[in-house]
Image (cartoon, rainbow, N blue to C red):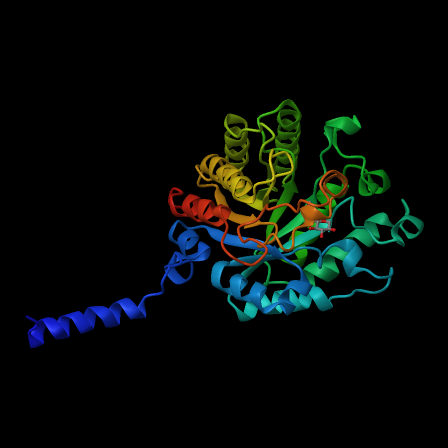
Length: 369
Ligand code: XIL
């Protein structure tokens, strides 16, 4: 018999059931977002953003929901900023910095000195006579414009390349050829003067994996940092780019631990600045299986990389597989033009991929900073 009480209870239950979605999606916003989980551990969760990405509402929604730190993907590089020797084009960088400010996100600056993405006019215009002047004016101009708004600046990017065979394993970069090894010190001193509160960072790739090439490059990178510190050059952090791969047999362990501990013992903070997982080497085209392998790499890498409290932030190079630089890289286009990479936390439709959950778990379980 249905009493009035059981009828009311049943109706209440039915109403509750109706209110629930048929298949409950896992919650990933608010307290369950990357930035909230990172924040609980004293970490920042960041990503690289292109100025064009800001015109895509799906992109900006995920950005606002998930991240506490952004880095312009290209807008602050020398080439994009400098259409001619006398002009600066700040439009894209301003848009990104303003967006971050409006949404209470911190900003990384990337970068002042690099051997790539130099403008077409560079080779014909920059000489041994004027190179120091051009370098310091560039840094002063850009750093001053964003003074107080940048949490950390990649002052120098990728200065080490042991295979070039030069002293101290320095890369045979245009800046080295024009100025000599003192370009490094000059860049850091100029940046410190222009924006005293930004954490001045040295950013490098190919120093993550347990293999011979990475071992050599790690040693050279630590030697460079030691020399800079010994000469009282103002430097505050090491950026480990973290472009890593799945299916390639790479592993992460004591080499990475020792690199982070080495930077820490020099008084530096450490940032994982450009994390993504190249999956070209994963066999088989099954998307779900590829995603699982990519996620496993996020898990394994971050388990080691986040052990040390010197590591203060994790940034992925993009947020969605819809827009990843890895799909533009020549070797990928030649080898796998019809198999777009799936390197990032969100899939091409902005759904959280297994990598999202691996990243969030790693942040959530990192030791407290
Ligand atoms: C990449 C950008 O993502 C691309 O859009 C651009 O065409 C080339 O540069 N290491 C770095 C980044 O330090 O600046 C690079 O960004 C990726 C590798």
